[in-house]
Image 1 (tube, one colour):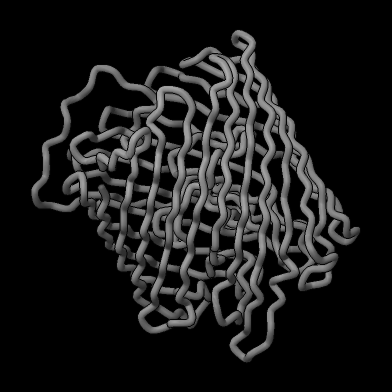
Image 2 (cartoon, rainbow, N blue to C red):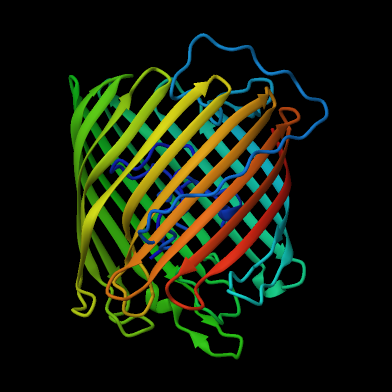
Length: 467
Protein backbone atom coordinates (compact mmCIF):
# COMPACT_ATOMS: atom_id res chain seq x y z
CA UNK A 1 0.00 0.00 0.00
CA UNK A 2 1.50 3.32 0.96
CA UNK A 3 4.34 3.91 -1.15
CA UNK A 4 7.14 5.93 -1.45
CA UNK A 5 7.14 9.69 -0.81
CA UNK A 6 9.11 11.12 -0.33
CA UNK A 7 12.91 11.17 -1.44
CA UNK A 8 13.73 14.73 -0.87
CA UNK A 9 12.69 16.81 -3.91
CA UNK A 10 16.32 17.25 -4.86
CA UNK A 11 17.71 13.83 -3.89
CA UNK A 12 19.15 11.47 -6.55
CA UNK A 13 16.81 8.96 -8.07
CA UNK A 14 16.35 5.60 -6.46
CA UNK A 15 19.27 3.34 -7.24
CA UNK A 16 18.23 0.32 -5.23
CA UNK A 17 19.40 1.53 -1.81
CA UNK A 18 16.67 2.39 0.68
CA UNK A 19 16.85 6.02 1.86
CA UNK A 20 18.45 6.45 5.28
CA UNK A 21 15.38 8.27 6.49
CA UNK A 22 11.95 9.14 5.32
CA UNK A 23 12.02 12.85 4.58
CA UNK A 24 8.96 14.60 5.97
CA UNK A 25 6.71 16.27 3.42
CA UNK A 26 3.15 17.21 4.16
CA UNK A 27 0.32 15.60 2.20
CA UNK A 28 -0.49 18.89 0.47
CA UNK A 29 2.53 18.03 -1.63
CA UNK A 30 0.53 18.81 -4.72
CA UNK A 31 1.29 22.44 -3.86
CA UNK A 32 4.92 21.73 -4.59
CA UNK A 33 5.16 18.17 -5.94
CA UNK A 34 8.26 16.19 -5.06
CA UNK A 35 10.42 14.98 -7.92
CA UNK A 36 10.84 11.51 -6.55
CA UNK A 37 7.96 9.46 -5.10
CA UNK A 38 10.32 7.15 -3.27
CA UNK A 39 11.01 9.66 -0.61
CA UNK A 40 7.61 11.07 -0.42
CA UNK A 41 6.84 10.08 3.12
CA UNK A 42 5.11 7.12 1.68
CA UNK A 43 2.08 9.06 2.44
CA UNK A 44 0.17 6.89 0.16
CA UNK A 45 0.52 3.45 -1.26
CA UNK A 46 0.18 4.48 -4.81
CA UNK A 47 0.64 8.07 -5.86
CA UNK A 48 1.73 7.58 -9.45
CA UNK A 49 -0.35 7.14 -12.65
CA UNK A 50 -0.82 5.28 -16.21
CA UNK A 51 1.19 4.97 -19.27
CA UNK A 52 0.30 7.40 -21.95
CA UNK A 53 3.13 9.74 -22.65
CA UNK A 54 1.60 13.11 -23.15
CA UNK A 55 3.55 16.15 -22.38
CA UNK A 56 3.12 18.66 -19.74
CA UNK A 57 1.97 22.24 -19.49
CA UNK A 58 3.86 25.39 -18.53
CA UNK A 59 3.98 28.64 -16.59
CA UNK A 60 6.62 30.95 -15.05
CA UNK A 61 7.82 31.91 -11.50
CA UNK A 62 7.04 34.75 -9.12
CA UNK A 63 9.25 37.09 -7.11
CA UNK A 64 8.58 39.23 -4.05
CA UNK A 65 9.99 42.67 -3.54
CA UNK A 66 11.39 44.64 -0.63
CA UNK A 67 14.81 44.55 1.00
CA UNK A 68 16.26 42.55 -1.90
CA UNK A 69 19.92 41.73 -2.41
CA UNK A 70 21.74 41.75 -5.74
CA UNK A 71 22.61 38.37 -7.29
CA UNK A 72 25.99 36.83 -6.62
CA UNK A 73 28.68 37.29 -9.24
CA UNK A 74 29.10 34.43 -11.67
CA UNK A 75 31.31 31.70 -10.29
CA UNK A 76 34.13 30.18 -12.29
CA UNK A 77 33.68 26.66 -10.86
CA UNK A 78 30.42 24.74 -10.92
CA UNK A 79 29.40 21.20 -10.04
CA UNK A 80 26.27 19.11 -10.66
CA UNK A 81 25.93 18.88 -6.88
CA UNK A 82 26.01 22.66 -6.47
CA UNK A 83 22.51 23.47 -7.69
CA UNK A 84 20.29 26.48 -7.07
CA UNK A 85 18.08 24.44 -4.74
CA UNK A 86 20.89 22.81 -2.73
CA UNK A 87 23.46 25.61 -2.67
CA UNK A 88 24.39 27.04 0.71
CA UNK A 89 23.57 30.67 1.48
CA UNK A 90 25.63 31.56 4.57
CA UNK A 91 23.92 34.94 4.98
CA UNK A 92 20.43 33.38 4.97
CA UNK A 93 20.74 29.71 5.99
CA UNK A 94 19.76 29.08 9.64
CA UNK A 95 22.82 28.87 11.89
CA UNK A 96 21.22 26.45 14.34
CA UNK A 97 21.93 26.10 18.06
CA UNK A 98 25.20 24.37 18.97
CA UNK A 99 24.82 21.70 21.65
CA UNK A 100 28.20 20.05 22.18
CA UNK A 101 28.82 17.77 19.20
CA UNK A 102 25.36 18.45 17.79
CA UNK A 103 23.53 21.35 16.13
CA UNK A 104 19.81 21.84 16.75
CA UNK A 105 17.71 23.34 13.95
CA UNK A 106 14.24 24.36 15.18
CA UNK A 107 11.69 25.84 12.78
CA UNK A 108 8.00 26.55 12.47
CA UNK A 109 6.01 27.28 9.32
CA UNK A 110 2.59 28.87 9.07
CA UNK A 111 0.80 28.58 5.72
CA UNK A 112 -2.52 29.82 4.43
CA UNK A 113 -3.79 27.65 1.58
CA UNK A 114 -6.68 28.03 -0.83
CA UNK A 115 -7.85 24.68 -2.25
CA UNK A 116 -10.49 24.82 -5.00
CA UNK A 117 -11.49 21.13 -4.75
CA UNK A 118 -10.73 19.66 -1.33
CA UNK A 119 -12.45 16.30 -2.07
CA UNK A 120 -10.81 15.95 -5.53
CA UNK A 121 -14.19 15.19 -7.13
CA UNK A 122 -15.43 15.53 -10.70
CA UNK A 123 -18.05 18.24 -10.59
CA UNK A 124 -19.64 19.81 -7.50
CA UNK A 125 -16.23 21.07 -6.35
CA UNK A 126 -15.95 22.18 -2.72
CA UNK A 127 -13.39 24.89 -1.98
CA UNK A 128 -11.95 25.92 1.37
CA UNK A 129 -9.24 27.90 3.13
CA UNK A 130 -6.77 25.82 5.12
CA UNK A 131 -4.45 26.98 7.91
CA UNK A 132 -1.36 24.77 8.11
CA UNK A 133 1.06 24.76 11.06
CA UNK A 134 4.31 22.80 10.73
CA UNK A 135 6.70 22.69 13.70
CA UNK A 136 10.00 20.90 13.14
CA UNK A 137 13.11 19.95 15.12
CA UNK A 138 16.30 18.53 13.61
CA UNK A 139 19.32 17.52 15.68
CA UNK A 140 22.39 16.83 13.54
CA UNK A 141 25.79 15.59 14.67
CA UNK A 142 28.85 17.68 13.91
CA UNK A 143 31.48 14.96 14.20
CA UNK A 144 34.58 14.36 12.10
CA UNK A 145 33.74 10.65 11.92
CA UNK A 146 30.33 8.93 12.05
CA UNK A 147 26.91 10.61 11.86
CA UNK A 148 23.77 10.71 13.98
CA UNK A 149 20.67 12.72 13.14
CA UNK A 150 17.31 12.93 14.91
CA UNK A 151 14.14 14.65 13.75
CA UNK A 152 10.58 15.35 14.83
CA UNK A 153 7.95 17.25 12.85
CA UNK A 154 4.26 17.94 12.75
CA UNK A 155 1.70 18.93 10.13
CA UNK A 156 -1.56 20.32 11.51
CA UNK A 157 -4.31 21.35 9.08
CA UNK A 158 -7.44 23.33 9.98
CA UNK A 159 -10.20 23.77 7.37
CA UNK A 160 -12.23 26.96 7.68
CA UNK A 161 -15.62 25.51 6.65
CA UNK A 162 -15.19 21.73 6.44
CA UNK A 163 -13.88 20.77 9.86
CA UNK A 164 -14.24 17.00 9.22
CA UNK A 165 -11.22 17.37 6.93
CA UNK A 166 -9.02 18.62 9.79
CA UNK A 167 -6.04 16.39 10.51
CA UNK A 168 -2.74 16.33 12.36
CA UNK A 169 0.28 14.35 11.11
CA UNK A 170 3.55 13.76 12.90
CA UNK A 171 6.88 12.10 12.15
CA UNK A 172 9.70 11.16 14.52
CA UNK A 173 12.86 9.24 13.78
CA UNK A 174 16.56 9.21 13.23
CA UNK A 175 19.33 8.02 10.97
CA UNK A 176 23.05 7.47 11.31
CA UNK A 177 26.24 6.15 9.77
CA UNK A 178 29.20 4.36 11.32
CA UNK A 179 32.55 4.46 9.53
CA UNK A 180 34.05 1.04 10.16
CA UNK A 181 37.12 1.79 8.07
CA UNK A 182 38.05 4.23 5.31
CA UNK A 183 36.41 1.94 2.73
CA UNK A 184 33.56 0.44 4.77
CA UNK A 185 30.51 1.83 6.55
CA UNK A 186 27.09 0.86 7.91
CA UNK A 187 24.14 3.23 7.75
CA UNK A 188 20.56 2.96 8.88
CA UNK A 189 17.49 4.75 10.09
CA UNK A 190 14.09 4.33 11.73
CA UNK A 191 10.87 6.35 11.64
CA UNK A 192 7.41 6.33 13.21
CA UNK A 193 4.72 8.46 11.60
CA UNK A 194 1.02 9.24 11.53
CA UNK A 195 -0.24 10.14 8.04
CA UNK A 196 -3.51 10.80 6.24
CA UNK A 197 -4.14 9.65 2.68
CA UNK A 198 -4.58 12.60 0.28
CA UNK A 199 -7.99 12.93 -1.36
CA UNK A 200 -6.15 12.93 -4.70
CA UNK A 201 -4.92 9.34 -4.15
CA UNK A 202 -6.12 6.64 -6.58
CA UNK A 203 -6.95 4.68 -3.39
CA UNK A 204 -9.28 7.35 -2.04
CA UNK A 205 -12.85 6.04 -1.49
CA UNK A 206 -15.62 8.24 -2.84
CA UNK A 207 -18.19 8.99 -0.14
CA UNK A 208 -15.80 8.59 2.80
CA UNK A 209 -16.56 11.30 5.35
CA UNK A 210 -13.10 11.75 6.91
CA UNK A 211 -9.54 11.48 5.57
CA UNK A 212 -8.00 8.00 5.77
CA UNK A 213 -5.59 7.78 8.73
CA UNK A 214 -2.71 5.34 9.10
CA UNK A 215 0.50 4.81 11.04
CA UNK A 216 3.75 3.88 9.36
CA UNK A 217 6.75 2.28 11.03
CA UNK A 218 9.94 2.22 8.94
CA UNK A 219 13.47 0.92 9.37
CA UNK A 220 16.38 0.33 7.03
CA UNK A 221 20.00 -0.80 7.15
CA UNK A 222 22.73 -0.64 4.51
CA UNK A 223 26.26 -2.02 4.65
CA UNK A 224 28.90 -0.79 2.16
CA UNK A 225 32.37 -2.18 1.40
CA UNK A 226 34.88 -1.05 -1.23
CA UNK A 227 37.58 -3.09 -2.92
CA UNK A 228 39.55 -0.46 -4.77
CA UNK A 229 37.12 0.96 -7.33
CA UNK A 230 34.73 -1.95 -6.85
CA UNK A 231 32.01 -1.85 -4.17
CA UNK A 232 29.33 -4.10 -2.68
CA UNK A 233 26.25 -3.02 -0.71
CA UNK A 234 23.75 -5.13 1.22
CA UNK A 235 20.47 -3.53 2.24
CA UNK A 236 17.30 -4.35 4.14
CA UNK A 237 14.23 -2.12 4.46
CA UNK A 238 11.02 -2.66 6.43
CA UNK A 239 7.70 -0.80 6.45
CA UNK A 240 4.61 -1.48 8.54
CA UNK A 241 1.24 0.15 7.73
CA UNK A 242 -1.67 0.25 10.21
CA UNK A 243 -4.91 1.84 9.01
CA UNK A 244 -7.81 3.17 11.05
CA UNK A 245 -11.37 2.30 9.99
CA UNK A 246 -13.45 5.17 8.62
CA UNK A 247 -17.09 6.13 8.10
CA UNK A 248 -19.11 7.09 5.05
CA UNK A 249 -21.31 10.18 5.11
CA UNK A 250 -24.33 7.94 5.77
CA UNK A 251 -22.65 6.22 8.75
CA UNK A 252 -21.41 2.92 7.28
CA UNK A 253 -18.02 1.55 8.38
CA UNK A 254 -15.15 1.26 5.89
CA UNK A 255 -12.83 -1.56 7.00
CA UNK A 256 -9.48 0.03 6.25
CA UNK A 257 -7.94 -2.28 8.88
CA UNK A 258 -7.98 -5.00 6.22
CA UNK A 259 -5.20 -3.12 4.44
CA UNK A 260 -2.81 -3.44 7.42
CA UNK A 261 0.38 -5.08 6.22
CA UNK A 262 4.16 -5.41 6.35
CA UNK A 263 6.57 -4.81 3.48
CA UNK A 264 10.16 -6.03 3.57
CA UNK A 265 12.86 -5.86 0.92
CA UNK A 266 16.41 -7.19 0.90
CA UNK A 267 18.82 -6.03 -1.79
CA UNK A 268 22.34 -6.49 -3.11
CA UNK A 269 24.08 -3.85 -5.18
CA UNK A 270 27.57 -4.08 -6.63
CA UNK A 271 29.48 -2.02 -9.13
CA UNK A 272 32.49 0.03 -10.15
CA UNK A 273 33.01 3.71 -9.40
CA UNK A 274 35.50 6.51 -9.86
CA UNK A 275 34.66 9.19 -7.33
CA UNK A 276 33.50 12.44 -8.88
CA UNK A 277 33.26 10.97 -12.38
CA UNK A 278 31.00 7.93 -12.76
CA UNK A 279 29.52 4.81 -11.19
CA UNK A 280 28.16 1.65 -12.85
CA UNK A 281 26.26 -1.02 -10.91
CA UNK A 282 23.87 -3.97 -10.97
CA UNK A 283 21.25 -4.52 -8.31
CA UNK A 284 18.90 -7.29 -7.30
CA UNK A 285 16.13 -7.14 -4.69
CA UNK A 286 13.50 -9.48 -3.27
CA UNK A 287 10.39 -8.25 -1.42
CA UNK A 288 7.50 -9.71 0.57
CA UNK A 289 4.15 -8.09 1.35
CA UNK A 290 2.17 -9.77 4.11
CA UNK A 291 -1.33 -8.59 5.05
CA UNK A 292 -2.95 -9.17 8.44
CA UNK A 293 -6.11 -10.45 6.74
CA UNK A 294 -6.33 -12.98 3.93
CA UNK A 295 -8.99 -10.85 2.23
CA UNK A 296 -9.12 -7.09 1.79
CA UNK A 297 -12.21 -4.88 1.72
CA UNK A 298 -13.19 -6.42 -1.63
CA UNK A 299 -12.39 -10.05 -0.78
CA UNK A 300 -8.96 -10.30 -2.46
CA UNK A 301 -5.85 -11.83 -0.87
CA UNK A 302 -3.10 -9.25 -1.52
CA UNK A 303 -0.17 -11.15 0.01
CA UNK A 304 2.64 -11.26 -2.54
CA UNK A 305 6.33 -11.70 -3.25
CA UNK A 306 8.36 -9.94 -5.89
CA UNK A 307 11.76 -9.16 -7.28
CA UNK A 308 13.64 -6.38 -9.05
CA UNK A 309 16.71 -6.70 -11.27
CA UNK A 310 18.31 -3.55 -12.67
CA UNK A 311 21.51 -2.12 -14.07
CA UNK A 312 22.31 1.52 -13.53
CA UNK A 313 24.87 4.25 -13.56
CA UNK A 314 25.74 7.76 -12.43
CA UNK A 315 27.86 9.94 -14.64
CA UNK A 316 29.29 13.44 -14.27
CA UNK A 317 29.03 14.47 -17.91
CA UNK A 318 30.68 17.88 -18.05
CA UNK A 319 31.26 19.09 -14.53
CA UNK A 320 27.98 21.01 -14.67
CA UNK A 321 25.68 18.20 -15.84
CA UNK A 322 25.06 14.81 -14.21
CA UNK A 323 23.09 11.75 -15.27
CA UNK A 324 21.64 9.18 -12.86
CA UNK A 325 19.74 6.26 -14.38
CA UNK A 326 18.71 2.63 -13.97
CA UNK A 327 16.67 0.14 -15.99
CA UNK A 328 15.56 -3.44 -15.52
CA UNK A 329 12.66 -5.76 -14.82
CA UNK A 330 10.10 -5.85 -12.00
CA UNK A 331 7.69 -8.63 -11.01
CA UNK A 332 5.13 -9.14 -8.23
CA UNK A 333 3.38 -12.50 -7.71
CA UNK A 334 0.10 -12.44 -5.69
CA UNK A 335 -1.24 -15.35 -3.64
CA UNK A 336 -4.72 -14.74 -5.02
CA UNK A 337 -4.98 -16.45 -8.43
CA UNK A 338 -7.45 -13.77 -9.55
CA UNK A 339 -4.69 -11.16 -9.21
CA UNK A 340 -1.98 -13.33 -10.73
CA UNK A 341 1.54 -12.13 -11.53
CA UNK A 342 2.22 -8.49 -12.35
CA UNK A 343 5.48 -7.81 -14.19
CA UNK A 344 7.18 -5.54 -16.71
CA UNK A 345 10.04 -3.12 -17.36
CA UNK A 346 11.06 -0.76 -14.56
CA UNK A 347 13.54 2.06 -14.41
CA UNK A 348 14.27 5.70 -13.93
CA UNK A 349 16.51 8.53 -15.02
CA UNK A 350 17.42 11.93 -13.65
CA UNK A 351 19.38 14.65 -15.43
CA UNK A 352 20.66 17.67 -13.51
CA UNK A 353 21.92 20.56 -15.66
CA UNK A 354 23.38 23.77 -14.22
CA UNK A 355 22.64 25.97 -17.21
CA UNK A 356 24.42 28.82 -15.43
CA UNK A 357 25.45 29.37 -11.82
CA UNK A 358 22.00 30.93 -11.31
CA UNK A 359 19.77 28.41 -13.11
CA UNK A 360 19.34 24.65 -12.66
CA UNK A 361 17.17 22.41 -14.85
CA UNK A 362 16.21 18.95 -13.58
CA UNK A 363 14.41 16.27 -15.57
CA UNK A 364 13.29 12.95 -14.12
CA UNK A 365 11.29 9.87 -15.07
CA UNK A 366 10.47 6.82 -12.89
CA UNK A 367 8.40 3.66 -13.45
CA UNK A 368 7.48 1.07 -10.82
CA UNK A 369 4.71 -1.19 -9.48
CA UNK A 370 2.37 0.30 -6.87
CA UNK A 371 -0.10 -1.31 -4.46
CA UNK A 372 -3.79 -0.47 -4.73
CA UNK A 373 -7.18 -1.25 -3.17
CA UNK A 374 -9.06 -0.82 -6.46
CA UNK A 375 -11.38 -3.83 -6.89
CA UNK A 376 -9.93 -6.49 -9.20
CA UNK A 377 -6.60 -4.73 -9.80
CA UNK A 378 -3.39 -6.46 -8.70
CA UNK A 379 -1.71 -3.05 -8.67
CA UNK A 380 -0.61 -0.56 -11.26
CA UNK A 381 2.50 0.48 -13.06
CA UNK A 382 3.06 4.13 -12.22
CA UNK A 383 5.13 6.22 -14.61
CA UNK A 384 6.04 9.76 -13.58
CA UNK A 385 7.80 12.41 -15.63
CA UNK A 386 8.92 15.71 -14.12
CA UNK A 387 10.68 18.79 -15.43
CA UNK A 388 11.77 21.46 -12.94
CA UNK A 389 13.59 24.77 -13.28
CA UNK A 390 15.10 26.61 -10.29
CA UNK A 391 16.43 30.13 -10.75
CA UNK A 392 18.25 32.39 -8.30
CA UNK A 393 16.80 35.76 -9.23
CA UNK A 394 18.62 37.48 -6.39
CA UNK A 395 20.89 36.08 -3.72
CA UNK A 396 17.89 35.83 -1.38
CA UNK A 397 15.13 35.15 -3.93
CA UNK A 398 14.61 31.78 -5.63
CA UNK A 399 12.01 30.96 -8.28
CA UNK A 400 10.69 27.48 -9.06
CA UNK A 401 8.74 26.06 -12.02
CA UNK A 402 7.65 22.44 -12.26
CA UNK A 403 5.76 20.47 -14.90
CA UNK A 404 4.70 16.88 -14.22
CA UNK A 405 2.78 13.98 -15.69
CA UNK A 406 1.80 10.77 -13.93
CA UNK A 407 0.43 7.71 -15.74
CA UNK A 408 -1.29 4.84 -13.91
CA UNK A 409 -1.90 1.62 -15.81
CA UNK A 410 -3.99 -0.71 -13.65
CA UNK A 411 -3.40 -4.46 -13.96
CA UNK A 412 -6.31 -6.88 -14.67
CA UNK A 413 -8.91 -4.16 -15.15
CA UNK A 414 -9.65 -1.60 -17.84
CA UNK A 415 -8.55 1.59 -16.09
CA UNK A 416 -5.91 4.12 -17.03
CA UNK A 417 -5.42 7.51 -15.35
CA UNK A 418 -3.34 10.51 -16.37
CA UNK A 419 -2.45 13.29 -13.93
CA UNK A 420 -0.93 16.54 -15.19
CA UNK A 421 0.47 19.26 -12.96
CA UNK A 422 1.93 22.74 -13.22
CA UNK A 423 3.58 24.34 -10.19
CA UNK A 424 5.07 27.78 -9.56
CA UNK A 425 6.91 28.96 -6.49
CA UNK A 426 8.94 31.82 -5.07
CA UNK A 427 11.02 31.84 -1.88
CA UNK A 428 12.20 35.11 -0.33
CA UNK A 429 14.84 34.62 2.37
CA UNK A 430 14.49 37.75 4.47
CA UNK A 431 17.14 36.80 7.05
CA UNK A 432 18.69 33.75 8.73
CA UNK A 433 15.52 33.52 10.81
CA UNK A 434 12.72 34.20 8.33
CA UNK A 435 11.65 33.10 4.86
CA UNK A 436 8.49 33.87 2.88
CA UNK A 437 7.02 31.37 0.40
CA UNK A 438 4.42 31.75 -2.33
CA UNK A 439 3.27 28.74 -4.37
CA UNK A 440 0.64 27.93 -6.96
CA UNK A 441 -0.23 24.51 -8.35
CA UNK A 442 -2.77 23.26 -10.82
CA UNK A 443 -3.47 19.53 -11.11
CA UNK A 444 -5.90 17.65 -13.33
CA UNK A 445 -6.66 13.93 -13.59
CA UNK A 446 -8.35 12.29 -16.57
CA UNK A 447 -9.42 8.65 -16.71
CA UNK A 448 -11.20 6.21 -19.00
CA UNK A 449 -13.45 5.44 -16.01
CA UNK A 450 -16.27 7.85 -15.21
CA UNK A 451 -16.23 9.78 -11.94
CA UNK A 452 -12.46 9.42 -11.42
CA UNK A 453 -11.23 12.73 -12.83
CA UNK A 454 -10.81 16.04 -11.05
CA UNK A 455 -9.26 19.49 -11.44
CA UNK A 456 -7.72 21.33 -8.49
CA UNK A 457 -6.14 24.75 -7.94
CA UNK A 458 -3.97 25.42 -4.88
CA UNK A 459 -2.54 28.75 -3.76
CA UNK A 460 -0.22 28.99 -0.74
CA UNK A 461 1.33 31.89 1.15
CA UNK A 462 3.55 30.95 4.07
CA UNK A 463 6.07 32.24 6.57
CA UNK A 464 8.89 30.12 8.05
CA UNK A 465 10.74 31.05 11.25
CA UNK A 466 13.94 29.15 12.04
CA UNK A 467 17.14 29.40 14.05
